[in-house]
Length: 399
Ligand code: SAH
Image (cartoon, rainbow, N blue to C red):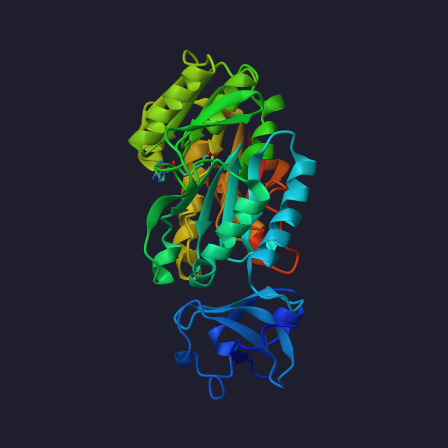
């Protein structure tokens, strides 16, 4: 049975529809605030969520000051404690062990693994985690105990520096919670080695979500000049070099990322082929176009331009602009690899942005492949927001 000592959060009539369909979010306007005022809760309080008639749906946690006011964590009557987290970690681990030979992957992908607000990436025996909600933060002790039990990591690093934490009124910090850690980590991908800095890097340090997509470059880049925009530590570019690209230019606005790209190129014996440039991608493209520089393949894998729903319009324009500018430096019959990791952007909207850019330049885009996040970032069928990574490999032809 559910923990009877927990307070109850009552939903409006019909306010349970999304949860019934399998989603785990409750928006504030779905709560019966007359009977269970949100002001009666503190950020992160565990609750039992119940439909208007009183029937319990499950347990989870609440935050009275965020748009997503509550999230369901469990529907089977377990307490939100170490043993539940041990179970969830084991279920998540079983999938990844089936998928990958080596322990390098996203082990927990939030809601999709039944752990809303928690992300855990595995780098061998080091784990790098991110807690994004006040509710998960409250359960942190139980989570750490579960991680220790299931994985016995040499270190667990909390990379709790996301902006989302501010909205949840959580502090931002980076901290080694279990074990000890110093220095960079090494990730292996496609036979290449990349040094990753879990303390100072982007997100957890590495983007496992694009691994399978980077594998798809193989048939397209042999002998090609490749431009990798928003390259971070050079994953796409160096993989392209490995698949036989003749020359690769990686562009990122972060000095640290550019330095890491050069190091990673050298680490893999690709220093001569890979050039790492520190620049704003839009500015770089403007200048490259003015100088009439051209590439056979351009990869556009930017940070989320649409972070919140209200940024949709502005963000969509940015996708359209960057893709159009990328096409302007493409050779005739060139290849555009274009991605969006914006949760609020539908796959079709990205394709529309690519097409609008192509039409404006009097070109046409042939979609050759559709890209999505790897299977260590499972899409929860009931949660469209979990299907966040979209991409296309397009051939760009004169019309
Ligand atoms: N493609 C990478 C991940 C990209 S993360 C991979 O597969 O690993 C986004 C990167 O874009 C970050 O490294 C960030 O420094 C960089 N960035 C953000 N805004 C930028 C801009 N305007 N121009 C160039 N780089 C930018």
